[in-house]
Image 1 (cartoon, rainbow, N blue to C red):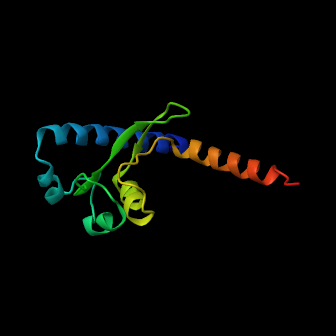
Image 2 (image 1 turned 120 degrees about the horizontal axis):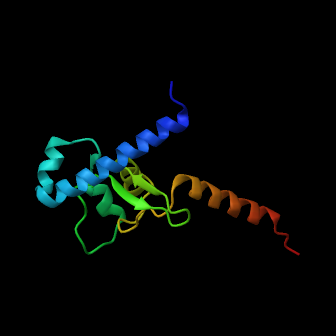
Length: 124
């Protein structure tokens, strides 16, 4: 029986492999065919929602693909999944040019640090 830590490590490794494979596939294959096939790690984008909240001169994406990134604080390699990107850009209305730079643990630690720092200050 595997521990949760082992399962999380396996899931992370699979996501990194999938992101690398999708990156290679995008270099070789036409991107429009990926939307029709819809493999794991690809989510279609709602361009109407993106156009409503993003003032950009570039093209809006037709779909999101899992992206691997290295955490700015701890240096761990993580994956920003297509579903997370869809939520960030369409629900939270993040700017289309923004990307993930911190892993979940570092984001949580930074949030707690900011919260404790803000509550500890006294205004005189």
